[in-house]
Image 1 (cartoon, rainbow, N blue to C red):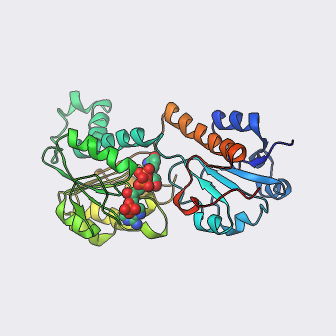
Image 2: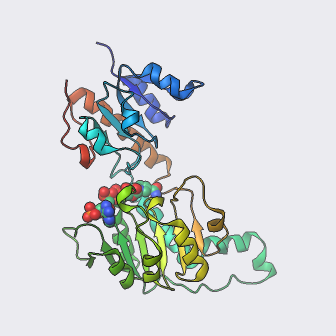
Image 3: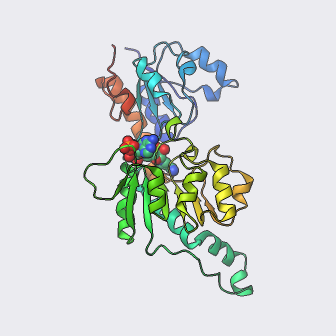
Length: 323
Ligand code: NAP
């Protein structure tokens, strides 16, 4: 029996490449001079996609008449129109859980870096200022006595919350729904949360629904001692409003791992001393990225061997294999 055909629009880690080549006929259009034409030429028999960041919308799906499954590298899948996939009976999978602890660790690291200005302090030492100008200036902010408002108390949000509690922070949260099994105070509105806490931790997914949730009004509600950390998706924050709030002292500081138009970061943001900026490294360790890559492969193998995906996204949870 011939192997199912899988197409990988962009190169991925060896663990994905080798895992897929061992089980499937793998198309790699990125190796061709013209990736677009190569996709059209190789699309006819493709039944699965292995995706890293590629925008999968209805027009893209039209290229693949026999497509059954899209296996996404990453827990966030705002690059994929999952509703359009569901409507066509196409399964979408992501890589939850295997990255939760890593991302939560990065979030706490970014929070402490931002509150205590640790990256600026290190630059101070490396630039020779410690021996030249003297000690690094005392930080205005301290982690002690802060109240953390988590926006999106899902898998990663909960892992951040338990770490934050260990640091003595009080935790509150906002989401569309109150979470079962937690005792943290729930705020039905984002503004209500921002008015109550002095530190906001964003872990909600990207997409139209959360786009620019953090705007000038929310930043004003957070206030002048406020600290904003974004480990979720860049599109959740109105970057121009944030630049304005950081420049004018509307909030105290921000720590960002994600940006609206990655990998491009506005010059105005780069120039701000009260912004700590990381290049989207939330899950970026070898072991975690390998675990994510293995799950991309395992979802495809499971789908074609058993007819079931391991980690389907909510929008396609009811999709079943046609053949
Ligand atoms: P999850 O378990 O699905 O949690 C997402 C949370 O967001 C849920 O609690 C959900 O609660 C809330 N939410 C969804 N839509 C919302 C809305 N419109 N307003 C407010 N809250 C909303 O996902 P996860 O595994 O924790 O991952 C969360 C996100 O982190 C991913 O989608 C991804 O974008 C991001 N991420 C970033 C990195 C990085 O490297 N920086 C790495 C991994 C993940 P309700 O349903 O109750 O609203």
